[in-house]
Length: 430
Image (cartoon, rainbow, N blue to C red):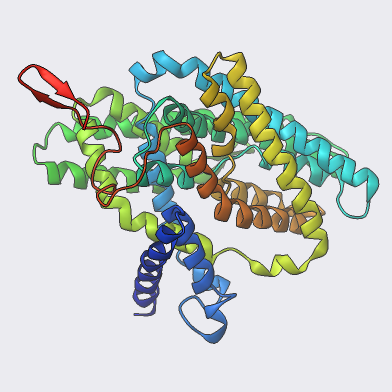
């Protein structure tokens, strides 16, 4: 009963907060996150309402994992072969370069901070935070694109880059974390720095490909839209569960990336199934309440106590400034190298600022370093800032690029693009 009441309060609170957000012209994602903070253990939870303890929020983590699975599956839909032929090279170039530039700038900024205040942060922590900075949260970006029906070259490239960004981030983190561990222990392991992260990416892509292929093979035996939808949901749930497997083989730790597995499943399915587009539209409607819960729970999980630690605020400020500069400059330079349009060069970096689940997972992995608690606190602080500000900045960038138009009363039910009327061989744009 308690869990059901919590979920009901979370969904209702998130939806009610969107009414205020709409008046302030803020994205719904921001409303959900703010509602989560208010319902969380550091606000209303203090008086025993809704989420009274952080453990209460953590007990509902399965909902967040499932939501991330559907988000990644949906992003996989963007990797259609026709679209990849058109802008695949640009997406790969931008996805890799902006992540690397961001990591380098954050590394430099935090190492300079270490040289000035050695007691504040160690070199190993600075290197680890630099790699974590590369990760971008796909969930907030996708929700803004969906809410405002954004459409255009910037939006298409953004969704591809966000997906590639996670794979690049995993490699950068594994290498940086391995170096950080070596600095503290005095020994370096090629297994942890190179072999295990590459193996995780390859196995995740293989598992996702297999899941997407199996889904297509089974879907052919069903002709009802509702049955196909149910089967797709079942497949994504299975894929999320399978991606949580971890085991050791000959001393090598084998694990999977939930985002990469589900993204690859969506990519394979959408490229070999001729009715995938209509099915994906139905999945969007089905998952809407799930995404509300995901973001409200994300907001409730933000630890406000870190704001009382001045050292965390100092490191966090350097981290946020250098990461933001890295994302913007990295995207701008890589877009210029890829010969993207001026609008994409100018605004893509702004849309890559949101940061959440992937970075928190990396911070959890880094906790056994000497300053592991500091790393986690800094990442939590940055997530708090980026998740509350990032969606609004994404909306601003897409609007400035001309890919989000003025909202109307029916914007949630219609495509955000002009309707062309044809009459007696003539057409006009109303």
